[in-house]
Length: 487
Image 1 (cartoon, rainbow, N blue to C red):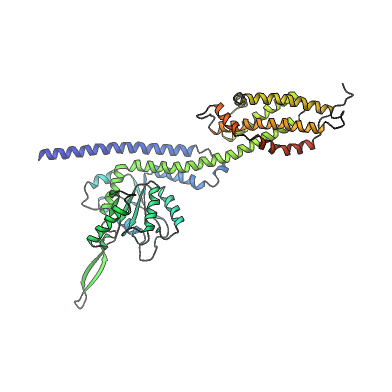
Image 2 (cartoon, rainbow, N blue to C red):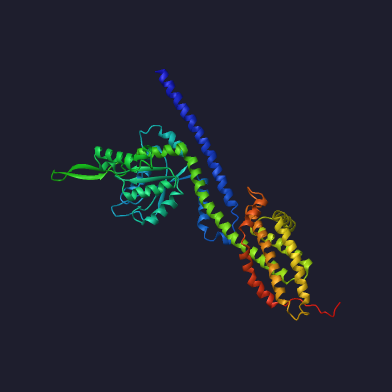
């Protein structure tokens, strides 16, 4: 007997050690999730225009942080009308908190309450309950009731299930008999969210033992075999009806039905076991999954808005450089003007992406990009010099030729501007990729980034974008003339 007691004690000690380690790891996971979410909120780096339409997402992040700080665990009940969702939650709490009644669809909105653990509210006779209660005592358990899944159309139901289930930590799906097609579809949708789930078979008091067992086995072995394990199915009677024989004033027996004590202990114990075993890690994981989804939307919006604005900056720089070079008659100034515009473009892009950069740093980045562009930059310089010289000659000969050299002048100016525009467009795209990646080339070096962008360039489309505007500007501006009598 002593040996059996020792073995039992040893087993309990071993289980306690394992659980203590799990709780420690859960606490570490919890703190990491809290720190990560706080860091995300502190470094959102969103401009006002980037926040537009994302106010709800940002507010949800704040709510999730408050949930972590207050150790809140959320449990939501889903199910069709008449399955007893509200009654199950009331039985868990031990009070009539959630509205119940014979009307179809009594629960019209999402409602919630807190569940306080104690020996009386959990029930008596459950093994080692106090230890489970003590381990969950610091947590705030929120029970959430939802409208019946058959009260709303399929698309809205799916959206509701996804939005709410993505935020809560544990899902109770309540049925009161064999599962219908609508219930199976809703159950599948909730399962895809990836949250722990308990299938609650309610109203078992309404079935004879044999029928109840048959329904349970059908659900377990056929209906949800691919979705849930047997350990995730619990039978309850949240609001059982008890028949009583009462004699009236004339002494006749009458059968009446009244509400009996709920049979809910198995579900209470199952929830406690889950919270005790993995409550902290569960909340941390769910918070990070939910936060990750929101963060993806925030990052994508930020990138989309900044990418659009970056394209505007680049196109403006392309037009400015192309126009300046097309209208500039002095060869030596073409390259200098182009470099100044390119540096200004890089500084504007760095400001857009919140990357601190000085004029010297922008010039350094321009040199690195120009070096990475290799032959393209060299040819750009040669073509610029050659076309500038030709343009200058044509400009000087305009008075002598009586304006006959004006058309060739326009043609050369537009060609030179197109070459300069393509060069600035390429530099702008490379700079954008570098700055959007946090002033880093990422996994690829600058040469690879430059090569990828250059390969994607459609020079014809770039030239077409600027050609007509350049022609309009050139027509409005006469080419320079030189008095042949001078010098």
